[in-house]
Image 1 (cartoon, rainbow, N blue to C red):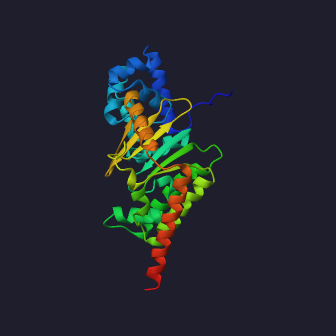
Image 2: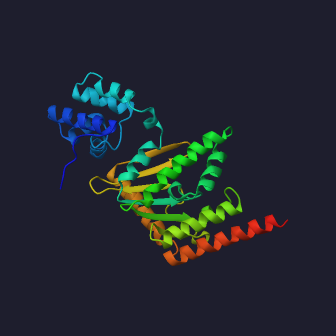
Image 3: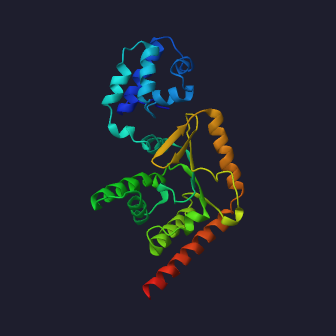
Length: 279
């Protein structure tokens, strides 16, 4: 098996330099993590170029390694887009071997049609231009190409029935969106299950969660709220998130029932569109 010929991206260069400086200081990842006050898993992701440290963590790394502000200054020179709260997830999911997504009130971004994405972005912004919406929609569509790749990760998708019934962008947009989800499930591009309203309380009722697994690194979990999100890397916490996902999955409809329900609700949206058209 061939080895990677040196770092390629700014993140990978940053991570490789961190690894070399850590080794030169005679520290293990575990020892450095104790000094930085984070998990060893997080140090491994920094060194692999999967994530960048926060400014505070970069300062603690400099203190631990005696590098006189080197890593904190370098961090400031990297692409400012990395500071946006979802950037880590968008990059990490490209390397994932398995993703587990949960759509509580919305269809997850990787599955969205352009029209659905546009309606979501428009609702989030009190002031917007068509050009801004176009850029956001194109960015999300490019991200969604992940599931078209031959090496696409196994994509478990758990959708709340409420996300299927909420009319985002109008009845026809919803019908097209749900048919796309069902088409992807039937084509084997995702494992689809629906948590019906009749299933009542379930283990993911309180939060959206996105789980990422990798071939050569510990799994991660991402939880998100309004204009914010948090990456979870503590092994016990991530394991708990996986358990919650599995519990919720056990309350969901079967794959066949789920696809049929998605198709049925899509037809309901189509009928609503037909009624609106003939008013």
